Length: 395
Figure 1 (cartoon, rainbow, N blue to C red):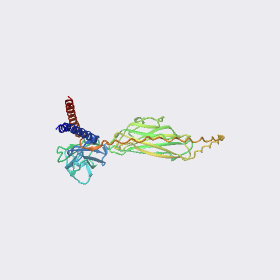
Figure 2 (figure 1 turned 90 degrees about the horizontal axis):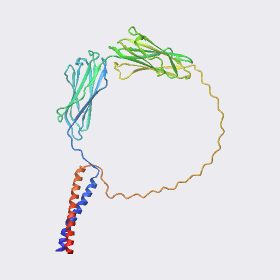
Figure 3 (figure 1 turned 90 degrees about the vertical axis):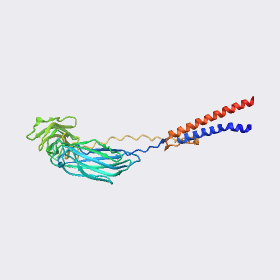
Figure 4 (figure 1 turned 45 degrees about the vertical axis):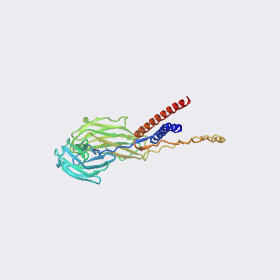
């Protein structure tokens, strides 16, 4: 009977020890795991851009719409994208349109409010974590005038997103300030001590005036700028220009003037060839024009090349005396490096933490802590009872 009773009281201790060991094992095997992402509903975003900020009559605008299902595991169904061109652009001002869309999407022209036009794309499904790229190319016809604006707003809806999502409108201004630049020189070759006179012609071939026109002429290498000039049409004279003239900046700038539609202006820069030029060199010169009103996104430039010919060859320098060779130094003996002592590899841990993704580690940790606490309680209870029985037996 006493033997059975001792085993009976020792059982909680054994169970407690087993629970503590199980808790430790659970903590080790779930260490480093991240919780799996929970399922997310279909969620849509839309963004849109235009490839230009200004467009002339007869010019093209390409709008790009990016529609994305940001869900990680749920498709969106019955997806409908609408795009409206409104503002000063009436339907009669569109010369043509064209679109591109991925497989599964269909396109249709729909009515537009505010004197504009509307377009629609639709698809049965848009897979999760997928972006559909749609483009709309519009050619501006006659009727739009300088200063008009074209606003474009797009939105997307789906069965799961009935309220839809709307993009930020892209606005394009109608503007037909259209500059052209060309340049020429008094000769296509220059000799020693020669001079080059560059003539730059700038013309506004658009239908509206260009304001704040700036012409920049780069002073070529191996030349010195000695003079600048202006030849203008009947609407401009030299007092209308702010000319920087020849300076050390490397550029000559004409600015502070407006150029009316159908008008042109000519400016000149004169340079002397310097002694740094050699026979056969090429003198490259670039001139650019820009205006805040131009349809171009960057400067409009033209480059001209003038050949250098007839320049005397540079004399070959006299040979210098040869320095006596220094005596050869005997090579030092090679020192053999002692072998490196590589410490023995430490034994790997018997149990290594598991990393990666899996079930929520916070739940596993909570379970392990619970098991550990229960096991410790059982060990304490078993130990207290055994001590008490030992004392009692001694008495």
